[in-house]
Length: 252
Image 1 (tube, one colour):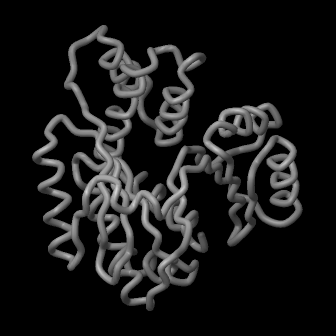
Image 2: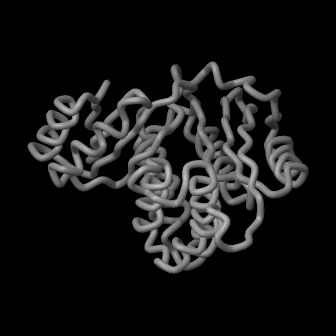
């Protein structure tokens, strides 16, 4: 997973810019609506909704926007019916990609995704075609160094984490999906500050490329995530911290 969490941190910082805030809020609003539709509007009993509310607050999404999105999900106010779809495919150089979409237009979503993949030299696969290359895991990320990072790691292990990795100023805490809520709540009770907490797809093995090819894939992932209907892109690309730094410098 080298560099993946740092890459995610860079993307969150870039998404916090004024240029991307509106797009980010739109995507989070869709997640809120779907989570509320599936599990109800009470975050105390709907853990998925609570996670998305946490994400919305971290993005500084206005409270009234959060509440409106939840009410659309519970049917209190009228809203679009979004469909959850998971696509699989390959980018150039054989990099596996999973794309999670929330859309009110399946034809538009698949056409936009196929266009970007084909233009880059990749391809869209059949449903589930690359899922076997990934494991579903809970992932909690904390920004910390030194003794503080070691302390957070020990707290996570005591709480039931499967694996903890400390690298490049980040503590990555992995859990089984069924244990994610328990571990997250235990760390919250200890006052541990998260950068993010989510259920994610973790690659079983990584594809390592040269710097130029790696940055090419990173550009593709960012373009895919900029699509209206795409919520999240997972890849098995091995991204080193040095390449992330080069990408960040290039984008500055």
